[in-house]
Amino acid sequence: MNIISSFFYRKRLRWVREEWGQGRKGKRDFKSIGSLFESLIKHNDKNSFYIDDQSWEDLNMDQLYSKLDRTFSFCGKQGLYNILRTPFLEEEGLKKRDKIIDFFKENTEKRERVLIELTKLDIRDTGVVELFFSELEENKWLKILYSVLAVIPLTLGILIYIYGIKSKFISYLVCSLIINSVIHYKSEGKLNYKINAMSTVSRIIKVAKNISKLNVYEIEEYNKKLEDYTQKCSRISKNSSSLGQIEGLDSIMEYFNIAFLVKERAYFSVANEINNHKDELKEIYILLGELEALISVASFREQYGEKLIKPILSNKGKFIKAKNITHPIIDEPVANSIHMVDRGIILTGSNMSGKSTFLRTIGVNALLAQTIYNCSAESYEGSYFKIITSISPEDNLVSGKSYYFGEVESLLRIIKSEEENTPTLSLIDEIFRGTNPVERVSAATEILKYLNEHNTLVAVATHDLELTKLLKDKYDCYYFREEVKDDKLIFDYLIKEGVSPTRNAIRILSMMGYPQEIVDNAECRISSCE
Image: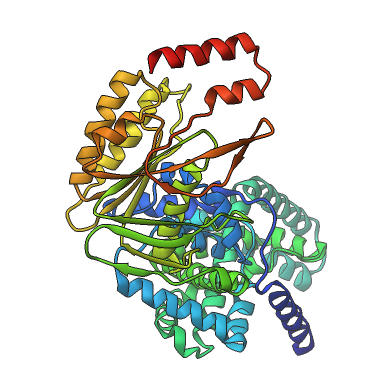
């Protein structure tokens, strides 16, 4: 047994060493990965801040998550997702997290010991989260019935051994085995999914117990909690020992399980314990997922350390001062600097010039600063923000909502988020693009004024140059521009102070091969309006 254990240990050690500091390719099932987070916000305090679905999609966080994810278990994947969806709004928790990440990055031997244990967890979604937020079926009478039915074949076997082979004993035994087989196969489809999840729960408890005994002082806070919770759940591990043997049994042992209803009886024993200790199990799962997620971030820092800095964050005022900030998922990004102190910014510029990307760059770095204590910049100073965006609201054919109505709802989220103590960082792209110019400019002006006066730092991109004049006392103006070379648009993606002096919408029509008549008439119409 020691030889086998040693073999698997070396195999896991080689695995974690090969993967350290490396990205992990492959598709991710974000619906499953996000299931723990969705359940937590549904059952916990709805007033605590988290990144909502709209902002997550606006910031392309699925892509950033994939770049950060170096986890081995499904538990770790969910832990990383939770971290990115719930930014800190204060220093203490964030600094503690940063200290642990640095520890795992610098201490190879201890990191590997913890990680080897975590690799023993399932890499798949085994339905374990569902157990934490639902009630498992408990039927006292079925449990008694299955226990009786399990004893009957054993009793008949003893009688046959004592009195010899008699037809009535054989008949009773055959009937008993048929009944137990019918029960087994009828319940198999219903229980298998839950039993697999129960087996995973048992493994989770064992891994948590092992980690708490590693005596890694730097994660002592985790160790104490894991030790406490695993002690309370010890009976689950004992009662689920039969469940752990179900996978990989040979056919003879499988017949044994069918004859004596081992799986069914074990289910009811474990179900009762899980129902009684769901809170402890949930906390164990969250703690293990968080630990593995922090190791994943440490691996990310190992790979991209030269491009990352630690931010300086403050609970005072509303500001962002960033030098040479870039988007972390762009391979060859263009760095820009921005200075926003108590005043928002209005971004203007041609189509495709980089306005939306810059909004996302600000948002993503603010989020990373408050979740993993890193930014992709030369320097970053900013407030702790509630981050809410309206970059890509969509119409919804199923619910019958128009694009404009989607925008209205999206912006209302931002307005309702304003809070006296914690400022909001609001990133808005093409405000009210779904309605006519007159009402758009009027409504946008009042909304942007309101947000600026109600503890919100706003960065808004727009083609409505009127807004730069109407809001010049409350917002600073920046723009992106392009050059035309050999009938091609060349973008430098560098931010500049002021208002965009160029536009390119009609030029793009010409470059794409639209009839010259359309292009010329459109240009004439613009000239007559100016």
